[in-house]
Length: 218
Image 1 (tube, rainbow, N blue to C red):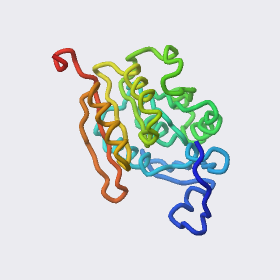
Image 2 (cartoon, rainbow, N blue to C red):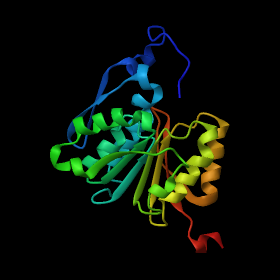
Image 3 (cartoon, one colour):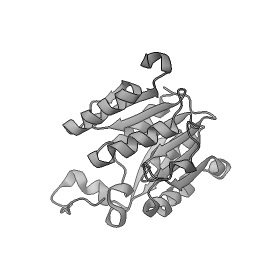
Image 4 (cartoon, rainbow, N blue to C red):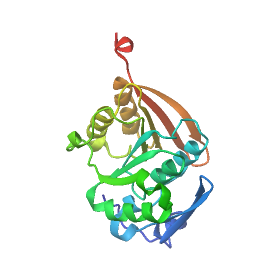
C-alpha cells in the first residue's frame, strides 16, 4: 500500500520514516532496524504500535519462553525479533514483496544461536491458510494491522484459523476511526476481547483476544 507523497522537510514528525535505520533497546540488546520507505512504504518503517507492543512483551505480561509465536503484518520485523529474544519460537509473516527486507532485519539482529528460532514466511491474510496448521500457535501478534477496512474480514478469518482456545492474541493499534471500533466489535463476536494496555504518550492500545469456548457461546 502506498501513501500520498509528502515533503518530509515540511512535516518534521514524519522525518523518522525517511531514516535508513532506527535503533531500539529491548531484551537487553540494541536492535538496529533498517527502514526503506521509498521502496516499500508503510511496510518498511517502524510504527509506534510496534514499539508499544515490544515494551509490553518485555514487561512479561505473557509467557513467550518456548512458546510458538506468529506475527501478522510484521513489516520491519521488530516485534518478531523482540519475541525471539524473549524466548519464543517465532514465525514472522508479511506479503511476499516485503519478505527479503524482513529477512535481512532478522539476520542482522538475532544472534546465531537463536537464528533457528525465527523464520519469515509469506502470508496474505485469508489466502492459502491451509499452509498453516490450524490452531497451532500459542501467541499471535499484530502491530498496526487494524487500519484498512477492506482487509478486516480476511484478518478476522486469519486470526480464527491460527488460533485455538488456548491461543493469546495481542493486537497493538491506534483507534483512529469508527471503522476501527467496528473491527473490535467484529473481533468481539468471535473472541473474548479485553483492553490490557494503553500508552497515553503514543495513543496506542493493546487488546488481548482469545477464542470463545463452547460454554461461553451458550
